[in-house]
Image (cartoon, rainbow, N blue to C red; front, side, top):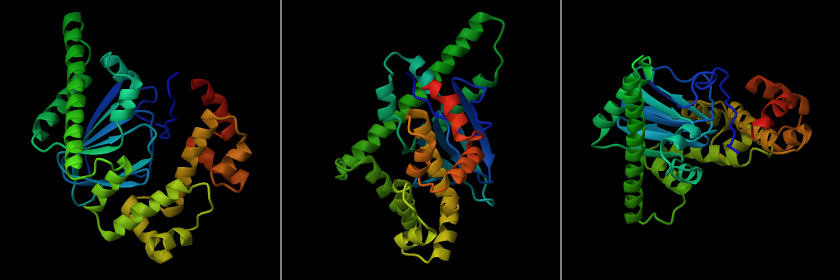
Length: 312
C-alpha cells in the first residue's frame, strides 16, 4: 500500500488541487507565519538572495543557486530577511507522480536518493532556472483542443522534470565524491549535514541546532525550557530568544509540533489507544493533548484515527 502522510496545512498545496506536481516561483521577504509539513517531496531552489529554513532539527542557509530537498512529512519553516527580498522556486511532486515518470523509478530508489540534502548548482544555475520557469509556463497553460499539441506539452513537461531530477542526482553524486575525498565517506548522512551546517553557522546557531536535535530525539520525555537552555549552555531567557530568532519557532511551539507530528504517525499506523499515545508523545494531560491535536489538525484524535487509518 502507498505510504500515507497527513498534510498539516489545512489549505495545503495538494488539498483538492493537484495530484501530481506543482511549481511555484515567488519573491518574498516575509517569513512563514506557521511551520508545516506535507505529503509530497519538495525541491526548494533559490535564484536570488539568501534564506534560512529549519527542517525538523536542522538549520539550512540557502544562497543563490542552492537547492534543498525536503522529503515528505518533514516539519519545516522558512525565514526571510524583510530588508532583502528572496526569489525562490519550489517544485513539489507526489511520489505517485514520480513513479509514473519512468519504470526505473521505484519506492526504494526515491527513498534512498531524495533524502534531506542541500545541493549547490555552481555552473548550472541559469540553465536549471530556465527549466523551472519553462515547467511553470507549461503548468499554467490551459490544455489545447488540438490533442497533438497537448500531448507534445505533456511530453515536454515529463522530459523537463526528468532532466531536473537527473541534474539533482548528478550533483548529489559529485558532492558525495567530494565527501569521500575529504575522508567523510564513512560518516552518516546526519553527521554530514551537521558538518556542513556547522562550517557555515555561528557558534550560537550550532548550539541551537544541536539542542533542537536533542528536543527532537527526546520529545517523549518531560523537557522544560530550563532543560533545553542547560543543554545549550545558555541562560533560559537568552536561549528562548535565540531559539526563536534562529529557527523561527518558540521553544514550546517547536516541542509541541514535534509531539503532534509523532502522534499523527502513531494514530495512523498503530492501534495504541489515545491515552497511551498522548503519554508516549510527551503529553501528561490527555485533555490538553486532545485540545492541541484538534487545534493543529482540525480533528480530535478519535476522529483523525477513524478518518485516516483507512488510507494506509
